[in-house]
Length: 175
Image 1 (cartoon, helix red, strand yellow):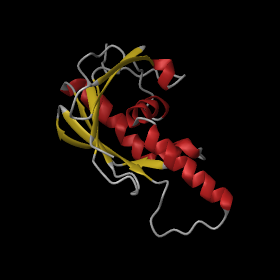
Image 2 (tube, one colour):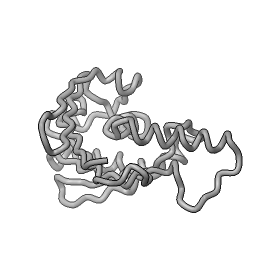
Image 3 (cartoon, rainbow, N blue to C red):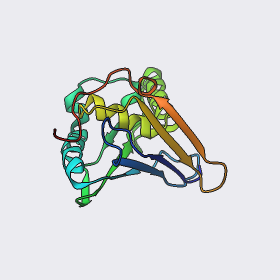
Image 4 (tube, rainbow, N blue to C red):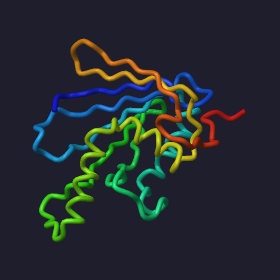
């Protein structure tokens, strides 16, 4: 797999200047998915609220309880680099090195989880968790740009309901 960068410029309701990018590192196809860093940027005030909500992501399994095949991952604790920049990483947990899978049902579930993590753009996973873990309100229409470092760029605009049927209620600005 070649390096891929996914940019989402304004996914949160009511705030046009907070966005993120996810950078998939280049790696051989035979390896498990490497950690994917997300760089989140915006003005200090909404970033303060966002970083507090992103801190909950590291507690995903505890907060959400038993999960499905599409939840074999975890998030690192967010690291705030400045008052306008934060980094958090997605970590695949589907294929754990050195763990022997004993039965065929567990092997199937593990492989389904790996496929979910590999083929679903992680920007969608991040946005889904912004709602279901962070309670954040997403914009109704979300722009997504995929960049492989050479033309053509893939530029999409999706309805929020294509990413997650639910929406949060927490806005990134105080009235």
